[in-house]
Image (cartoon, rainbow, N blue to C red; front, top):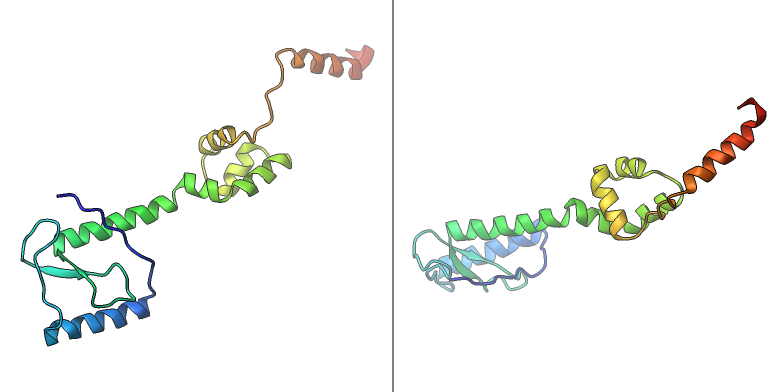
Length: 153
């Protein structure tokens, strides 16, 4: 059985401790009664999971295993928020300005602590890179160098 679970907001540790105290007191006084796990249906090692800490007595009941898997899923989601692509998207404006100022992709990659290939792919996708020179620009450049050197060449 697949159930989509959405966690509302993030509470401070102080808030969480207060909620857990209220929750545990309600369990001891019989105001809350544990029910089987909503994921697997077992009645062993049941825990309450809070989605909204502003409602301390509103919980869903889960076995320890499924509860830990749910929290692991939330941790993975938070890691994804800090992934390289997410960091690049958050710093898109800064990356663009650095590239426009003349810094190389290698230099910007070092500043952003990402690999050259990650930054190159991102900058290319966002069209931040200057257009490649035309096929015959190298000939003009060589001619300019030869002209500057003059007769010594």
